[in-house]
Amino acid sequence: MQMPKLSQEFFTLTFTTLGSNVQAVSLLGKLLVSLEAAIGFLMTGLLVAILTKKIIGD
Image 1 (cartoon, rainbow, N blue to C red):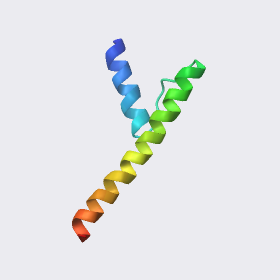
Image 2 (cartoon, rainbow, N blue to C red):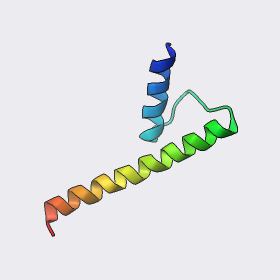
Image 3 (tube, rainbow, N blue to C red):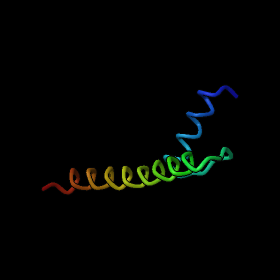
């Protein structure tokens, strides 16, 4: 697997919190993966809130 493709797969699976067979080894990598997973949760919640506000209205 090429590195950019592997990185994209890792990003997508981490951001969507599906998990991956690729794991971060260093402490910095683990912190960045944790931050990315948290951002994934927040972005999903934000999307739901925006769509709900648009459907229900002000």
